[in-house]
Length: 551
Image (spheres, one colour):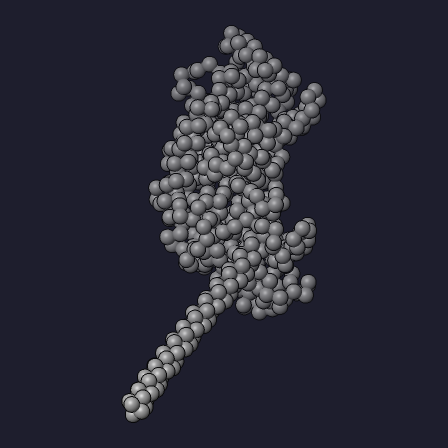
């Protein structure tokens, strides 16, 4: 509040000062926007008020979010902005997983291969190999890309003398796909700078299996293609003894997964390559798309709209831009630019960098809020990097206040989205696992999210948040372990069923034989009785004749 009071004083002094002594400023899109808003009064309170959302507004958002989730389950993106993609992962780990499993994680420009050894009741043992994808693989043909991946996998396994073990592999593939089975997904488009040809429209698992066959040095089984959000949920459940109700990512982007009843997954299972026989499935919500059709305009500020218009894909991944770290720093920069142009901060003397798009990374927010009160060493260093000179102590307080309000809005929206899913899951006590750099490194994000969820959660429900990590690595290996366990359990159930059916058939045959034997015995008894009666009749007749002769 000290910063806010100082701001008000500065604002009043500026508005009442000598306008002739003010230096003209270069017109920017923001100053033009200010003109269109009829020279409204500018203060920290008025600017920051745009980022403050009441619980009524957040509950309205939750209602719209839940409705989109329902429509996504029913009809997919045709009638919803939330895709609700099937993962085809039927269960969480139950502690019975054991064995060696391989995880491969391809995301952006990095490839990671991991070996996980899992034994019930023991910590997982991990070995891994990391490599940066060469440009020739990322921008050449798809065959070159997947050949490089296959070579890295083969080299890793051969070095550990596991080439012929036919180990199960979980593959984290962080690009947009249409997944129609646990090990079947069609690449929709490349992102993150990858342009390899001949892959879009192809089955990713098949491309990898073909490359492994071309390499020819190892035997493995690709058992699952996964999303990192699903992996986060699974990894947390393993640590928590099999319980995790929601997995959440809040990093550069945001997403969530949770367990849903299979009967509700109408659209996702309509195009499944294989019949899905399990009662539940982890759903990859892809909630970052919420708002893409204007259904959340009431939570957008003018600054959000500017950020969206300047993004690579305007009108796409709206909730990502409101919550995640991808745009948070730029939102703070836009607010500071506007306040500076109106002489509310830095006496109107910002810097060229402050007026340049994307020069205020989100990490600055965490660093500023990590500052010890009094010294503000991080804040001073950041202002120096931005070329801002002559800043006062009050300016530093104002800068901190802007970071607080913008990032708290992000936390409140994240909390509302999480509370929406918790209200759908509706268990008395639920566990939420969260991963991601924005959540992890911001000093107050966890506290703000927990606080707001408690305000928005339905009565009678409770929750706990745990921070987890490496869903794309450990999660992939664990999903491979789950798939292997479920497969073995299904095979055992099938063997048990076949044994039971065989026993039932044998019992039926035995019963038939017993009935037939009893029938034969009854017939034999009847025959003997007939013979006995016949004998008795004949004997009686003879005795009668003998008596007749004697008479």
